[in-house]
Image (cartoon, rainbow, N blue to C red; front, side, top):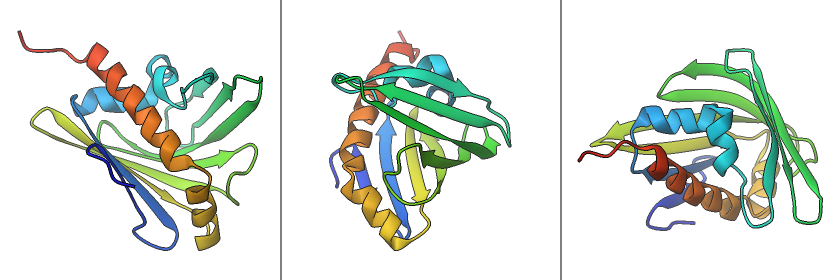
Length: 164
C-alpha cells in the first residue's frame, strides 16, 4: 500500500516495513511514540475505539501494555518489552497481541530520521515466519496503521512549535 504519506513494503519474507513522513522534529515524534499522554491520543484510535490502558516502562528490559476498548465493548490488548532505546532515533521492542492476530511474537524496530524539520518514521516488524507475516498483512493492519498515523500527524501538529 502506498499513498502520498504512507508506504508499506515487505523487505523480506518475514518483514513488514511501514514508512511515513511527519512534519515535526524527530524528538517530538519519538516522544509521541514513548510518552503515554501522547501515545494514547493516536495509537489505535479510530471510530469507536479508545485506548483505555497505556503503561510504559521505557528502559531496556522494561515493558509496555496497551488495551483498547471498541464500540461494542470488545477489548484488544498488546504488550511487549523494550530491547533497545536510542532516543530520539531508534526504538526496538517485542510485540504480541493478547488475542493472536498472527502467530508468535514480532520484533519492532522504529527508526526516525530528520531532515529539514521533517521526520521519516520507518517501523519494521520482524515476524516469526512468512505465514505470520502474511497473517498480519491480511488482518487489515495496513489500514489501521495508516489511520493511526493520520491521527498522529494531527497530534504532532498540535504540539509542534512553529516559527513566527
